[in-house]
Image (cartoon, rainbow, N blue to C red; front, side, top):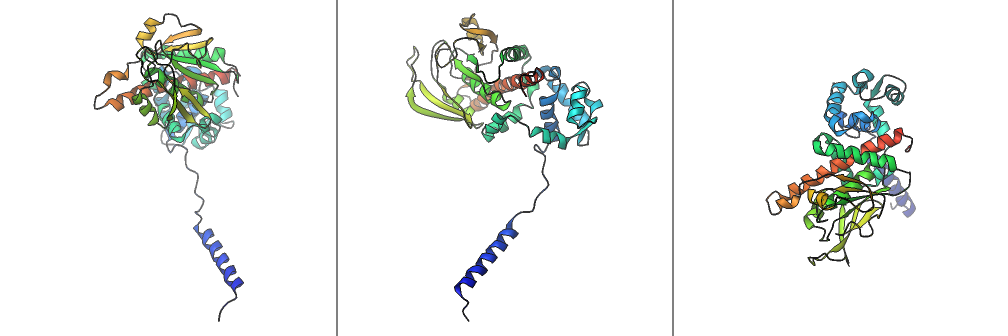
Length: 339
């Protein structure tokens, strides 16, 4: 007996629907956003702790205290972190009690800045890692962290662009790393209107090793068919599109710090090499001048571990920038300039 065609079609549709329902996975219990109690508590502290507990010099102490407070439980009691948080703030976040659970912290972590969500996933994951390493910031760089934080907080106006120029002698390595990692940090902590630029005294070119080390953490860098002016050496100076997230990008090339599109006045100047610090005792147009010298990764070009040394410098600068913006955001929130 041959079944009518419409009955066969109906049977096939019902069978497909049944298979689709059976194929759907069961709802699972939501997992921790970090799968690590300390990382969750540390992120919570970076967002809510007292500013004086968040400096690089206090970072190791902060982590030790959070580890002890957590113990083997999934909650933190006020008494265990009394030196890290304002009590009224802590109790408000805990829902009126003196104990806050990791689950409560995780729910509060949903309130991340939109620009952090816009970061490329790999970029964001690398920033997540670096925010657990603020104790690795060199002692000599901790005062400059405070200087840049103070400048940002003093000059910040919601929606108003703020410019920071990273200056070194070559504008090929450290200044490029500084500008890119600064832009990543600003977006990570929800202050993307603060933009970083790079410059030097005589243009060369964006070094391919610098490009490679940024690409390894998810920054997209593409060479365009356009070139900027060459320096005195006459080396080709391509213009690159650098993108670290959705709607977060710039055009990068080697240039003098006074060249457009760099800001011309009221910017912060960060000098990342001792040579630039010496050569530029005064930076034209800058409202603050902050030396933060780093060893040039160029010194290791050709070594078997060349890539690792570039990554080391990238992350050194990245930790500096992320610490700056973590502290600046916290202070701006307390000052009522951010909500």
